[in-house]
Length: 135
Image (cartoon, rainbow, N blue to C red):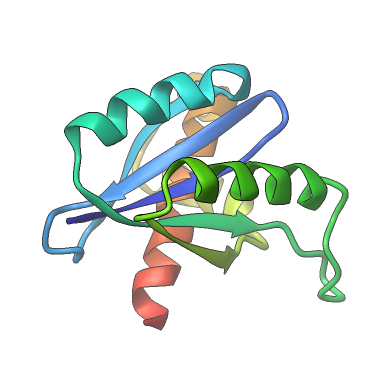
C-alpha cells in the first residue's frame, strides 16, 4: 500500500506518493484545490493507500497560519469519506524553499522553477520524505 502526501493550498495543492514498499517519496501532480476531491476519488479508486500525510503549516514560533482552518475542514471531510485511510500531519515549514533549492540543484531551468505547480508537488514530496524519515 502507498502513502499519499498533500501540500494543501487555497488555489492549488501538490501531491506526492510513495512506492508500494513505502520507501521512496516522489512528486505526483498538482491539482486545483477546487478539483481536489475529484482527483482523490479517481486516485483512491485505483491505488491502495494506507495513509494520507497532510502538511501542517506552522510559523517559526510553532503556531498555525490562517490556512490551518481550511486544512482541518478538509481532513474532517476526508476522514468521513475514507475512514479506512489513516491521516497523519507533518510539519511543512520551509518545504517551498527547500523545493526551490532542490530544483536548482537538480538543474531545472528557470522557467520551470517559476512554475508554482512544480514547487507544490516537490514540496509535497519533501513533506512525505520527512514523514517517512520520522516514523
